[in-house]
Amino acid sequence: MNNIFKNILIGLAAIRANLTRVILTSLGLTIGIFTVSIVTAGVSSIDREFDKSMEYYGNDKVYVGTWPWSFDFDWWKYRNRPKVKENSLDYISQYSEYITAASIKKNTWTRASFGNKSSWLQLNGVYPEYQDMLSGTKVVNGRFFSQNEWDLQRRVIIVGGTVRDGFFDGKDPIGKKIRLNNVTFEIIGELKKQGMGMVPGGTLDNLVIMPSTTFKRILTRWGFDELVLQTNPEDMAKAKEEVAMIMRVARKIKPGQDDNFSVNSADAYQEQFDSLKIIIAGMGFLVTGISLVVSAIGIMNVMFVSVRERTKEIGLRKAMGATNNNILVQFLSEAVAISIIGGSTGILLVKLITLALANTLPVEFDLVLIFYTFMVCVFIGVTAGMIPARTAAKLNPIDALRHE
Amino acid sequence: MAKAKKEVISIQNISKIYNLGDTVVKALDDVSLSIFENDFISITGPSGSGKSTLMNIIGCLDVPSIGVYKFNNELISKMNDSQLANIRNEKIGFVFQTFNLLPKLTSLQNVEVPLIYSSLGKTKRLARSKEALNIVGLSDRMTHKPNELSGGQRQRVAIARALVNKPSIILADEPTGNLDSKSGTEILKFFDELHKAGNTLIIVTHEESVAKRAKRRVKIFDGKIASDE
Image 1 (cartoon, one colour):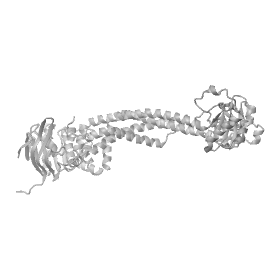
Image 2 (image 1 turned 180 degrees about the vertical axis):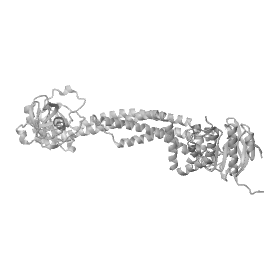
Image 3 (image 1 turned 90 degrees about the vertical axis):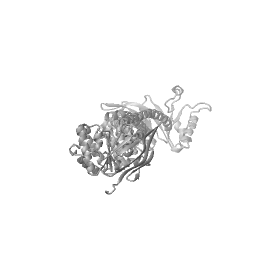
Image 4 (image 1 turned 45 degrees about the horizontal axis):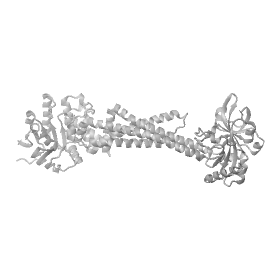
């Protein structure tokens, strides 16, 4: 063991002696590791953000709307569809077996202001029952609106996390009044702060929830309605099928006619997102794979040069009693060291970039990744160094000593 | 007759044959030689005579094609690479014509090289290396690199390196070939001292003046021992 360690030290001394060459050679690996880390960190961060956003839609929610949730829908097929009406809910609550709770969700965006500050916020008008249907968030401060407030069309709102920071400098907003579309509302509740989301409409922090009755009375600007239906996650497929049938009945669609509504759930996004993720990751890994192979070839090349340059030294060391294995370890450790220098520089770069971007982009970078990168470097170093090191180890001491 | 000296090297009917396509070259042809403890031998011969091959075989850098080579009664001719490396490390000290010091290491580190391949710990390695440099009179040049030393000093560092593992024999290949006559004489005087101190020395040379100093002179011609006196 001690012997191996001594030979590793000899290999490392060679690194110090040829620092410029080592840095240039390891640059390839730096770039490779940098790319792979960025891609992996990026994909896993997108994934995490996406999951967070997906929670907002919930794995137990069925949404009935005009449009399918799809990134590539043919809009002209759907533009003449009738709007979603609240009265469809009566059919659903009457006939459905799988739906356990239901609410309308009216959506729009509006200008909100407090004093001289203003901002665009997303508005939802819902039933009081929606309180128990909130997913991916909850009321952490204050309360939800009551049935009574809903009946009386009271101007009360539950706000997302940005309102506190944006309008009230981080102070408790409960009881404060802000203006939405030039109408004054009282803040009675606050939702848990989420951070950034990746799905359209998934930014919960910009959300304002109010009674759908109030919404209908005051906000007549552009917007769309959806039905939000709750089921058990395991009944999701059956529930969607059932809701589609009930909707056809409610809208009196004849057999053979196409649906003029869409039954959506979060898994639709999930599937599309997964395929997108595979493409991103695939491209990233392809580029990385190529750069890793190229850098391995570079290291191998430099190691051949190093062996050639030091043929006489190898001969001398063998004459002094170095075994083939001693020489092998010496050159392998040189190759692995070059590789690790390159990889660590790559990791360092990634770390710096994630630190710099920490405030703007939620990219996360974990220790497991560093560990894997390290293993990859050792693997590349050993692979690239093996042939040159074996060449060195097998040199005949007499020929090597005579080498000039 | 004085008490028989211990036989360090026993070479019996050794041949080294190189097969170069159509022609077969016998670099050594049925050579037998015994070397005893505290011998001071010179091996001379014209170039191509086989003296280098004989030296390589004695130095365990090469193995004979035919014949038996025993070193301290151990059979060398059948050993594998790592066993040979071990013998080279423990039993043989090499001194080369071109010194063969590692240019980036200090004198002390150069002397330490053979010990790195032995099982000695770091403190012992340092102590031994310093001791060896002291023997060759270079304790004040320990941190100098080879390019900061004169030719004679470099060869003395190389000799210290050869001595550091307390080998059974010291094998010098043209040790004065790259030195001016003054440093050459100095080195040869030093070899005399080593011999007096009980070391076994083998010097390969083509210089008569060097060969004359040896107590026993072996001449090689066409792969055979021409004289041994």
